Length: 333
Image (cartoon, rainbow, N blue to C red; front, top):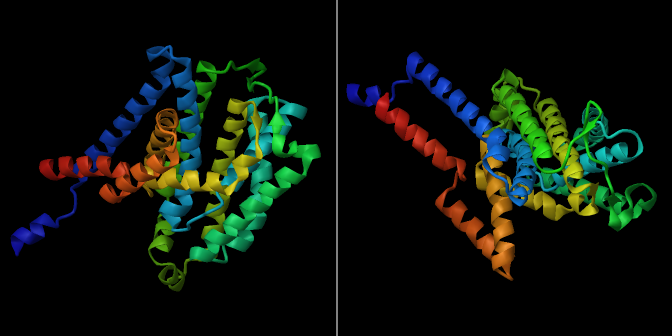
C-alpha cells in the first residue's frame, strides 16, 4: 500500500521549478532558432513557405483556444482570419500600410463582428455551435463575393502594399519573416499567460463539464463569449500578416474549406497545448506543398497520412513531446 501511494505522490516543488525552468529554456532555444533561420539558409522559397506556415500557426493557436481549452468545436473559424485579412488589406490600400496601425484597424473590425456574433453563438454548445459558426463564415464569404465595389468580388483585393514599420517598408522574404516570427512569439507568450491565468483554468473546467461549471457558479456563457472574441482577435492577427504575405486577400480565405484546414492543423499538432497547433501548421503546409508536387491525387494521400497520424498519435504530434517529457521526469523524479 505504501509503495502504491509512493507512486501517486505529487511532484516535489524543486522538480516543478526545474521542469518549468527547462520549459522556458526550450522555448528560448526554439525562438532563437526561428529568428536565426534567415542566417542559417539562403533559400528564399523555404523562408516564404515557412512564413506562411507560421502565420497559419498563429491562426491554429486561436482555434486551440476554442477547441482545446474550452471544448467548442468551430466549423467556421475562417471568418476571423478572412475578416482580418480584408480589413487590413483595405486599410493598407486606402489609408496607411504602417503595420501597427493596420493591425489595430483590423482588430477593431474583427472585435466588433466577434462581439455581435459571439453574443449569439455562445448561447449554444456542441454541434449547434459548430454549425452556427459555419453559417456565419459562409455569410461573410457571400458578402465578400457579392460586394465587389469594396472587396473586389471573386478577384479579391489585389495589390496590397508592403507593410511598413515606422515608415520603412519591409521587404518580402527575410524581413517579413522576422516580423512574422516576432509576432508569433508575442502572441504565444500572451496566450500562454492567458490560459495559465485563473480565467484560463476556468475555461478548462467548462471544457470538462459545462453543466457542472455552471452549477458551481461559473458564468459559462460570459467565459465562452470572451474566449470567442479573443480567438477571433488572434485569427485576425494571422489574417493581417497573410494579406501582406500574399499582397492581397481572396474570398477563399473565408470559405468553409479553410476552416477545415485550420481545424486539421490543430488536431494534427495536438489540442490544448498552444505549441502543438504551431507544429501541426508547419507539418501541414510543408506536407501539402510536397504532396502537391509528388501526387496527382494529393488530397487522398494527405488525408490518409492525417488519419494514420491521428490513429497512432491520438494526442497529435505534441503527444510525442509529452511522452518524452513524462518519461524523462518519471525516470528522474
